[in-house]
Image (cartoon, rainbow, N blue to C red; front, top):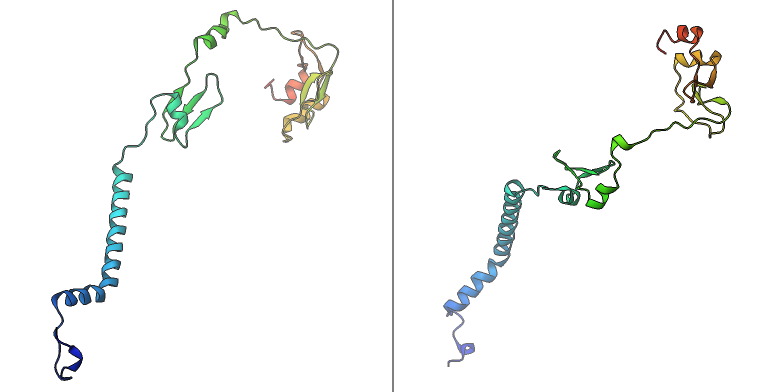
Amino acid sequence: MENLTNQDPGLQVQPTKIEFAKDLILSNLFPLILSLLWLAFLISVIVFLVMKFTGTKKRAANFEECAGISGSRIMESYPEKCVTPDGLSFTRELTADEKNRLIPPWEVNVTKAVPAGNCRVSGCNGEICQPEKEEPLNSICIYREEFECYKNAECVLQEDGSCGWTKTEELTACLGGNL
């Protein structure tokens, strides 16, 4: 091997092919990395868009699947109903035990509770006639002209056993016959 330190300063040493390749890579490393990062970003965006617009959306086939989809609403009913964001609805299947505990409509006995005692007027504008022994009922406190008609009306026990406004000619006329 020759000692390069003793060579003529005017003489230039040619770099080897490996040194040339190394210098070329190092001098272009930043733009190369930047280009690769942009390429990776563009590929990611394309993959995301393809999956978003061509991917199959999860569609429910029953109540349980509907309840698991984000944005679905469970309705307060019995049995419960689930409505997906795109409008499909599913009703929860009742178990055999739940079905056995249901009372058929033809077996329901409706009995009215007969108020014990007198009736009283309640509500924000005195528009409600209710049993005296019950807690006073609240209304939404809106004013309607017809509420004035009840100020002189009678809140008494009716023939059917419930509290109500007695249909007098004065009340009927005041309400315009809409009683």
